[in-house]
Length: 114
Length: 116
Image (cartoon, rainbow over all chains, first blue to last red; front, top):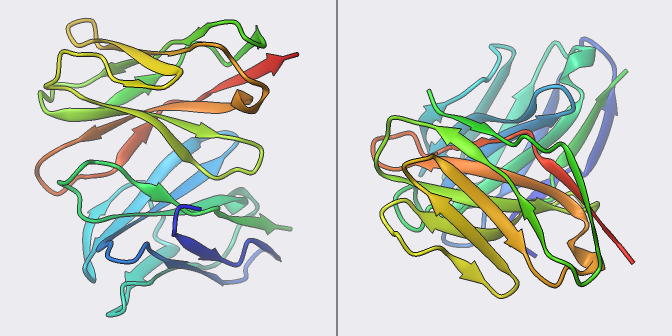
């Protein structure tokens, strides 16, 4: 158990809908990262938050947004969903980005868009 | 931009044998970390081993060791005495240090099957 909690574990929805994925980092970790894993694109970095502030952005679509709350949990919002958004979405956390460089991953949220 | 390449989509090994997974990367950075992550069927990403670029000594974690060749930008993973539980996807990853970019860049992965 990595200590990173993601909900929901599975989610099925329809095209055009909006979903929210939630992540609770390990106790004491200030950085949260979101990754998308799909068959064709592999594992891709989406976005990073550190202590409530956006720190880095990767290949995140404009239809997607995220935030980190004062209690350090994070949410990834996916809107106007398309079939191609079906993927496994991982959250990871670390104490900060300059410590050991190690990220701790949650078990992922499997999103299926029909 | 950094890239990570794993040239072996699939590999298999007999139980108790040794297997080596290949990884090459491209970067102009001098300070970075390299990782091997394991993703078993349970799908959670698990850190196997980590190498700091400034360290010449190859990292070792029990049955797992790496061959880090900085000049060649090569970072292979050797699994000794393979066990059935080693069956998983293995991802090589790069992380730049410094600045505000702390994200991991992953390779496409190698699917390893350990056969009894």
